[in-house]
Amino acid sequence: QVHVVESGGGLVQAGGSLRLSCAASGSIFGIYAMGWHRQAPGKQRELVAVITSGGTTNYVDSVKGRFTVSRDNANITTVYLQMNSLKPEDTAVYYCYAQDNRGHNFWGQGAQVTVSS
Image (cartoon, rainbow, N blue to C red):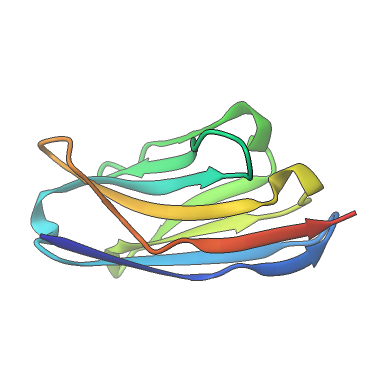
């Protein structure tokens, strides 16, 4: 079992920045990737960014060049999402997840990000 805890989020004006943090614990040796999804009101949850155990990253097109996913080099099961140049359409609940090598996803509790215009 993997336990995922995230922190960060909040309210920011358009053009501002926020950083989300996420830490996985428990059976972490089988973690293949960690990342972030988000869900805005009335919309489906979408993948925002992911980083694999090998360091490969991937982003949804709408955040490329603005968001950066990274990990703590001393603890690779701690990851961060740096969000710059935020837009009102980035407003959503952001969910951190950890995926094991069998494809099972373990989710954090969610963090609200609100971007005012």
